[in-house]
Image: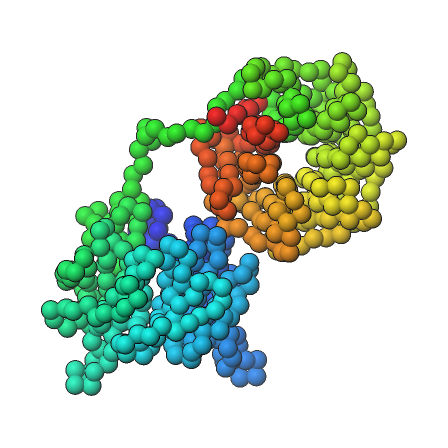
Length: 564
């Protein structure tokens, strides 16, 4: 079971909505960077992934076809906890010393050096990993796949571990005592290389979870027990509940949920709904990173292009072509003559070779500084969507129905793409290294001789591609799709937004920028995608980074933005 709270009541009045999952096995832990990329682990090695739309089974739950029962195999080893880092890499632990790590979209086993059941895992701010389990087991790893067992003098069955800092841990669990006919909770602190037992005034039941809460640590355990640790003081909190509490969910509001058996969900906040979904002041001021320029048009803009001298061009509906000669000192956009009455989707400046424009009906025009001349006509109702080139005598164009054209300085020739799917954009490093992206995750790669598919592991439409080297390439697309190629493999990045991402551009100095629907803008910085406040909700369809590092975006209703 996975429950989701979004502040809206269901038909029965409940504020919690049960999500559709592909299995009926118990789930023990959940982790993710945001709602668009979540992972849940549980019984029979279950690993589920949520992409913002639906949960899918990634691993585990293998059925033996002969017995129609769960197979006795390593992949079905139960998992109990999961954690991860800011890049989306994750680690999960479970029975028999099982430790799995997520590499791209594949879960790989790491050698833990033990067969003892593991129950908890945490990561310190500096990236050190700690896993804990039965018989006082504590393992440590720097994240390189190598795990070492630490010398813990306590034989507790650790259920959970919390990193309080780079060199400080709090571990909790319990041991079964025959004379008490039950478990007795234990709390252990690790600091300055030493383990020490945290003394308590009266016996505690087995502890299940630890999470930072306000200025201390909140702890939950069996029989509804709640504790709050601040410094060396431990207080028992009133829960009015006798059900075993299994986990704690910290909330962005500073509050927390305690959850457990029989559907128990509790919070100390006076207003439950406000604790989960605080009211946002619509009048609150927000720093805006971009400013609106006066484009002089209300037509939809499809493309942006910066020439080597940083003259900016924009193009769009009804033959719209705009030019801004000196955007840094003079941000005036002038309207150039229209190549035709048809929409212009893309531009490419060949320098002395002229400015090329492609668009509807398979037509390409060339501007000599005064007027447009038709340079090529496909004589088909196929739209040219993007252009890219290495020089005046080598220009490529892509579009609907798998269209790929090449200008060799003498004429335009249609290339064999091997597909009828739309190709939305094209990018390359030279005439032997080019990528084109399109429908259903399609990536075509040109090696100087032929076009071949280059799979990235997604079926979402891909709208643009950009890179500054063959080992640093990004793709973007439908429903917040973000992917990166490091020269060896593609890795899909957890999306920061669920809106469609429509264009990407960048430079080695400032990195890439992405724009999309609803005014979304993302910037890649320090290995992460960060949202930027555009100040608008208008769809953005093009982005351009100039050689000087200035960034511009354009889109619906003639909007053109300049980054401050």
